[in-house]
Length: 230
Image 1 (cartoon, rainbow, N blue to C red):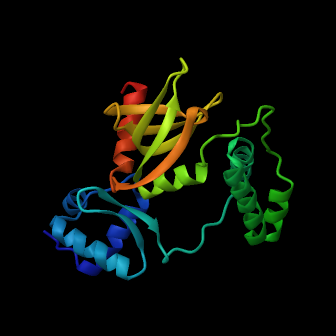
Image 2: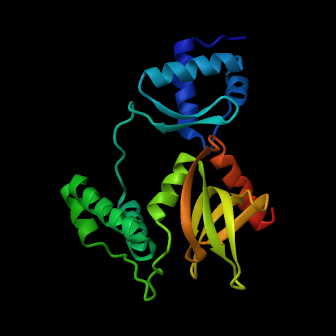
């Protein structure tokens, strides 16, 4: 059996992480390269020291976030139209801070693209418009988004469809924008189950210091499967 050198394995490991569609555990990567999980952990540490930004930890899998060995990625013309359409849609459906960020992202793109593509972005064929704009929320969405990224629990008051108000504590997992309403997908500690909370029915948001890191991504995957009935 041919034994792979560590240098070659590091290169192949980077390739595997680049091509991955989701987190890869050390056990899976070890099986792929015929080494122990402990060797994979050492390799991940080495790649991080070399500048690769790899998210994840033991038992939860690893995902390549940024690889400084690769040049900045260019965009095809159709990809550029898709980006414009997506950001224009965010400008229409997002809360004020998110909408402003989408507009700023478009301006940054325009300033960094080659002249021909910058012109194409400025005069894009595709755009988005909503006649009904999102309701003004009683909660601060930047706080909720940050709590979700930081993987800390939140408390809030919630008014259900019948008008009854309850106090909830939950692990925020993600925000989904539907046509008629926008919702928080969460693990509700009050009900000990996954729940979907309409953002326009949430008030008195309070961010706690209780962390549930690093479980947000697997919990969100489980929540979406639970909601869809799979």
